[in-house]
Image (tube, rainbow, N blue to C red; front, side, top):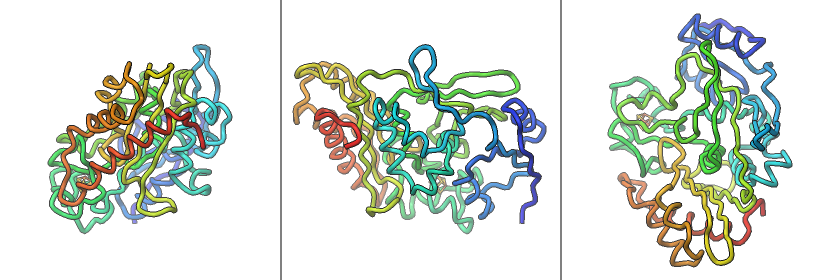
Amino acid sequence: MNNFTYTRATSPLEAVNQGITDPNSLFIAGGTNLVDRLKVFLDQPSQLIDISRLQLQEIETIPDGSLRLGTLVSNTAVADNYEICHNYPMLARAILSGASQQIRNMATVGGNLMQRTRCPYYYDTAFPCNKRIPGTGCPAVTGINRNHAILGASEQCVAVHPSDMCVALAALDAVVEVISPQGKRQIPFADFHRLPGNAPEKDTNLESGELITAVILPPLSWGKSGVYLKIRDRASYSFALISVAAAVNLQGEKIQDVRLAMGGVAHKPWRATAAEVFLIGKSADVATLTEAAEMALQEAKPLTHNGYKVELAKRAIRRALTLSVQGGGLA
Ligand code: SF4
């Protein structure tokens, strides 16, 4: 049993000020991942700061045309929002594929970003794990690694990021807004999550005491062509073996712009930037989409049991791009 104090913040600033009084504090909102971790002592905070009642629950259009999602907006509210379904359908589809209605009702925007890997060795405290206790080792490197990373991993950690929503946010060039006692700052989504390197215990580039207040979606006039394709072991809810968020802006026969990101492949949502650059100005034919998929997986380094992911990812990319070229959306 780990004893902790519980406090309920009445403003974002009060929450972060409460946080810096005790570096072993954690913020809690929906708790859909944190409570699971508390139950098995993966997290042992001395203080839990409840932020669930803060006024950060709005979806609003801001003057530059971006959509600002308050950190406490539920996943249900995001997936049901008209603007998101219409202009950012890959995001709605990613959320709907991620968890059951009950979990979506509780899970929040900010919490989704702060999810930790579901690597089984991380959750099983009978095993060592560099993410849980730095320097103890990574049993997944030589153990069962069917669900683990094929891109961007290190010898210290081969875990994958679990979120579907974050794959779409990466493709949409979202921006994360955070607050600390020093003020506010914005973090481009590509810089929010980290690769494991030599510090797999750190999932994000948040500084100690910072609280996510919103996620901002820049305008994307052709976002309605977006799709989210998720491949999983079973038809009911499960984490992605491979997922792809894709949107193609087709002008006549040529690709004018494109977004492409993958989930289930790395410690962070993986943006396939080189493949995007390759596709711009090309015809959206099978040969071109196939070459882009090859390019996106060029750096893949599969482990003993996850070589299948390389070919699966290539096929998923081709399929997602094809669906987007055909119109995309929620269909
Ligand atoms: Fe821990 Fe990462 Fe290795 Fe999993 S892959 S056991 S999370 S260090």
